Length: 150
Image (cartoon, rainbow, N blue to C red; front, side, top):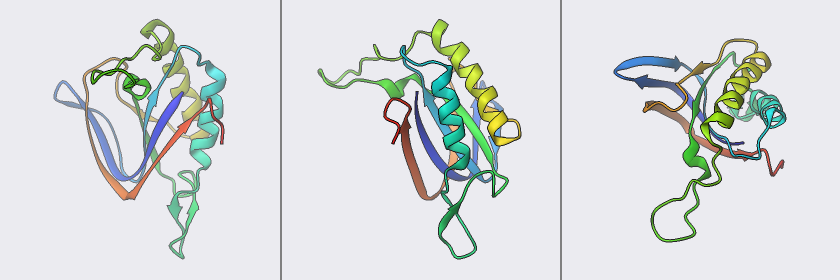
């Protein structure tokens, strides 16, 4: 699993003209799932995400996690995170998991992340056309891949 994490002051996702999920201060997380991923990847990532110290403390240092600030998480599935641009100018998505493999892992990841956060996670809808709005705070944007656990 690959995630792009953005520290936000607010974020929302619209599907078909309606708001499907929204948060105030917290993390907007885009997740891409590849064929080699399993629920173990989601377990590792959920524990990592909720403990990332990327929010400012009283001294302005990035020392607090989303749990410590009582923030929210908006999770959006995004298969394009596994795009390959090696050949030509049209991306290939052969590394992205097929929907029948990815959707159950995405749903499991929602549950894992909600449990680790201690509250429900806002989401988009797997496979839907979505419009995501955000106010990136900082800006702070991180990329984490469960296959290269740094």
